[in-house]
Picture 1 (cartoon, protein in one colour):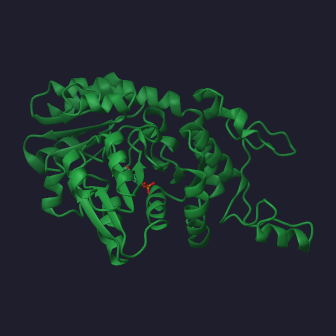
Picture 2 (cartoon, rainbow, N blue to C red; picture 1 turned 135 degrees about the vertical axis):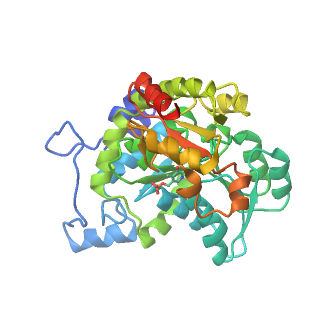
Picture 3 (tube, rainbow, N blue to C red; picture 1 turned 90 degrees about the horizontal axis):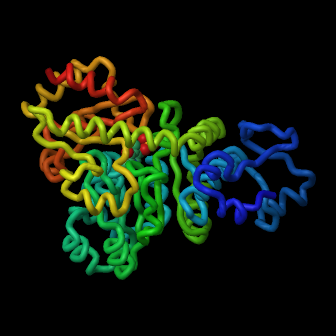
Length: 395
Ligand SMILES: *Cc1c(COP(=O)(O)O)cnc(C)c1O
């Protein structure tokens, strides 16, 4: 058996490379991909014991799989969370983290600046099952105070938000949420487990789209939910076990390989993004530029008190609306037009017509998604090449 307690004392880099490795009887160096749906029992008695909970072992890969478990336990070590469950995508993680705890009649308070599909779950889907969702401006502590003056079951937020890079003051919001009786779920995708640890500020549950920086190489979808043993085992696990949004062993293996280099890649993402943001800041024709590590970001101080660097994503607005935004995208030669982010390749998208196209004009205006607004995910290429590409496209 692995001594996870021992591994908790390892440094981040060591956890990323070696945490929770389950080595089989063959002594392989690289983590094995266990592509099996089921497991074989020595006896009928063992099968019985495995199902009634008196024996802990792998039973069925919808519940648990050795490769998936390596990913879950490694991510828990990195986050500093008691436990973790992996899911087939980030959205499966977001939905499971909310649906496993909410019932008809419960109140959900959510920041209004969130990813389009998170907005759908909080604003459209959950209310169909009798959950009362209230959206607030996440930057406004008074709005949180007001919304949380009434008891609530759950608070959901992203910080920084996708795509407008709004930052939420995590500590006071978590304190207010707890006074209202709520569990705080933080979608930590933009910061990644390397740059921000929401548990330290009082958050209860962390969700990831592992598709983004954790894979970071555009290969697989995946997600994860982290929190206390009690939340993960008592609330989340039965929901996942019986509804089945399981991560495949191959994808879990790919994500394990992603974790090995995560810290190195995030450092390069942040260096490159800062250089590109500094270049863009001085350009004519850019009417708004948002990057948390720049002093010009309206919440720069708060962002840097919660994160150790600015992350991989820059938001910008070009003068001239949609025609100008599309012209810029179409002139880029190196940076690809794509709605993914956190990838080794630099990617740019026009949220108003892609990731956030289902929002009403009013909702778009509230979170700053104008016709000239673009989201740039800065990759691992040479920053001079990226700046050169942007310069020629804006010329
Ligand atoms: C991409 C993303 C998700 C969804 O993740 P998938 O893996 O694409 O399902 C959720 N939240 C945020 C902030 C994201 O950027």
